Structure formats: structure tokens, C-alpha cells
Image (tube, rainbow, N blue to C red):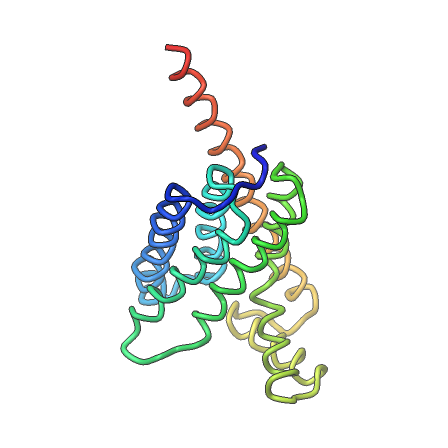
Length: 199
């Protein structure tokens, strides 16, 4: 994989284009999924965003670029609402920061892609727990039980920890599938570029 590079005009264009692409996917597809009440729509959008920023980082290996793309996407997302909603803004920004940290600490290989997928996949659940316990000062156990009850009500099954385990597993699988798809798309683009260079 490519080593970290300094900022230049090309990197700024990459950040603007892919950050806007991510933001537009959140603003347009996100609204559609919300209107259709699609289950796990937040995780689906996170997966799409993950694919975009992983591929963008491979071809624009500039430290800090992923966080900047997240900032652009978050502003586009927040402008799509009639009222200011800080939740989606913070969620997109945190996803960008998570991927930024991982790709800055590890070589941009399959392991880093999968690690990003796992953490981004589980983050929406952790965000809910952290927000209610740390920011609002609620007790952890009641918040956890309330989340379990909400999952049970959402899927229409009796309350059970097996349901929570399945819910967490689905989030992790979505993250890993997004990471794998990003990796495969990256390899396909790389092969295409190599073949073009040899023509």
C-alpha cells in the first residue's frame, strides 16, 4: 500500500470529491431509507460511507484526509434536515475519526480494512450507550436494559439476550462486508490501472 503523503492540490481535490460523495449518499439515500423505515438503515449508511472513505484513503494516503472528508460529509448531512440535528453530524464525524486513527496506525492492508469495519459496525451501539451514560449521567445497567427492550420491540420478538447478540452480530457483519467490498473494489481498480499503464 502507499505510504503517507503530504497535502497538495490533488489531495485537496480528493478530499472534496469523496467527502461530498459521502455526504450526498447520507443526505439522499439516508432520507429514502428513513422514509421507507428500512431496518438497520444507520448501519447500512455507515457501511456505504466506510467503502467510500477506505477507497479514497488508499488513493489519497494523506494523514488527516479521512477526518476532513467526514467533516464535509457531516455538514452536507446536517444541511439536509429542516432543523439542526447533532446526532447524525456527530455519528459521521466519529466514523471518519475512527477510520482516520486506524489507517494512521496500521498499514493500509486487509487487516486495517477489517478492523475499521468491525469498529465502525459496532460504533452505533456503543454511541447509544456512551451518550446516555456519560453525557446524560444515566446508570449503565438501566440504559443497557432499555436498549435491549428497544431491540426486542423493533424486531417483534420476546426480550432475550440472544436477540441482543444477533443484533450486535448483524452490525459487525455489515461492517465487515463493507470492508471486504472496499478491499475488492480497491484491488479491481488497481488491476485496471495497471492494465491501462501497460497498454
